[in-house]
Image: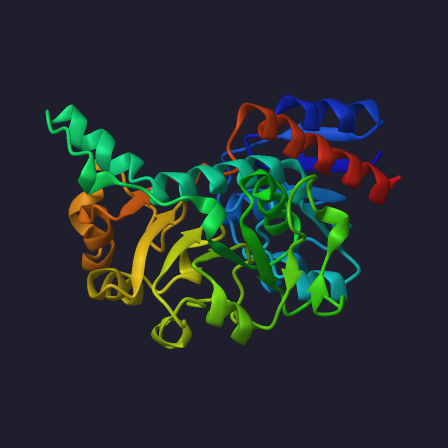
Length: 321
């Protein structure tokens, strides 16, 4: 019988669907690298969490593997190139939380443009500062999206009702530069594919929706910021290391970046007993009144928990049947 090990805490629908498909399923979410290597022996498929790196040594140590799954979008902890070269399918489920990410990103942008987090904190402290919190209307802005996969397109769809201009850059798409009408919501302008230089010349808002790779690490760098034609608002719901935190903090303080809303940070281990170890650059972001920060929850909804697991279950079944 086909054996599957789920080493992540996920919605029960994943286990239920795999069992219904006739697979022998074990759920053991507390493994570290060494114990997972042992537990995976003889397994045909493995569902992993992001805290364990599935590297070449791991893949070589578990020769029975035919499939590696990840509940979510990020695959940076799996050596997918090596796995695929060994005939192992690598699966993820970005379709499951793209709606959640799209909605959260819109929420972050509106919070930035309307000073919602800052105004809320001020009111709670007894300060009623209306003029200091005069906002900007999204409909007058050009939003530049970098990365136009599941997450970038979901964000673009949700911008449709605001009447803003949406442009995007994606190095790996094969479609021609120009409007992409199939994803255009009713009543909105079609998102337009542009070059990176075009985006940097026109965007008032830059939103990152890219995976973390060697190529995208510190995508937002001093050079990127210098190439922007005007001060801009920054959104990042992808991976923390896509943004050079030091460069961001400097640009915020220097006025090159007007505000930043981040669901992810380079440093995310912020338990109360380790706050004193937060890098100075991150602390500068935390102390700024022009930042909105959330704890990596853009794709973390009640609905997405189910959909992420259900989508991955269907993909595993299709691969192993």
